[in-house]
Length: 593
Image: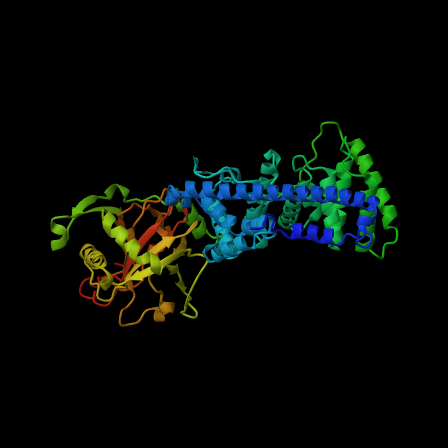
């Protein structure tokens, strides 16, 4: 086994072989032998230096291994609790996407090709960039829906409960950069500001302050209706910002040939320079860059340098005239969420309010709601009637306690897990099933003949709903991901979607939704038009009719699955169709009965 199997060490040996000792006749002169001794000394120093570098590299690699071992042990002690926290989930995905290549490049690639191969063999199990972007977007969605302060999320606190480590400045920066790349300057500002705040408290800095400020400045610029001077003036009030940082950002713009931003950053550097007691950069340097950028941005103006001197004079005068202790007025920044027309509307606002548990529409019949034991004269329920609770009277929404046993739940999850694929929705134009950003979950379909448990659950649904199941869809099982949700939708097909369901099965007359896990926070099912919210409870179920007796769609049943804030959400649902139920649920005297 080689002692130091490294490229650097081999280079040292190669250099030694190239040393010219007087044409291989060193034995003829003691003077030449003295040179050999001196060379031997240098070689020893080179080898020792290389060993020190290798030891330092291995020390860092060992630290990474210990960190991975510690993190995995903590997470595996309670996987559901750990991954049920969206901050933990985001950091885990980031660890094996953004951080992973840095670790491989910086610690392993130089020397350990065998280790590289073994690590890359496990790469198929790792998340990819799309997963990281999805995790980051989910965390931002939760922040908006539940009005979570940025600082609390960064501290690992969700609704007053701390279940994750504090985020580093670099964690915050990457979250902000993901928002920036998506054109979401609202969240970029929030997270770049948090990155700067965190950076100030870090002993070992994890993010580049100048780069963070650059992202922040451009996002402020976009949120200020493309007013650069207003945005950069605001950035200048970032706590502790110095002229040198603005100067560096100006130089960065300069190297990119962006004269517009070079001028703005250099002007701001000059403004801060005048206020600094201890100068952090030379005025001459600032003015050189500013003069050139002014000339390049306005080549038809040959007196740009003279204008620069005049501008510098104005700064001095303004600084002298400013009263001691008087605060400079900050420009007003309206940092608003980037929303499309639908999300600016009333329905989406009500949806988010309901998800937060707010009461938006008073129920005039709340005092009439009842609970009862029910068996519907079905033999399977006579000895074990279900606990039925009225959640709303019109439309009638019923909540059933203890609908499923723990054994049945675990069996359904076990059968569904290998089949889970990204949930899809039907495109109303093409009628094709496709993934959608407003539905984040994975689902699987279980047929009745796959297991006796599925057959037993289907029979129980038939007994509870008193509807014919001949044309019902297979049992659908869904597991929601990080911040998993399904925005407001109908379960039934509208008239303009008449071809959505085969006429032989008819429209979806009713829905029964089983909750197969407790959700620590979030994840409610909310009915927006009537202001009803139902929170998941393991083993329970909620049932409603999607259609009036006439077959017309009941638009009051428009509902949504709120984002899961903390915990995991498993559900299974049964969509029941019209055919076979014509004589079970007959038409009434009114189309809206």
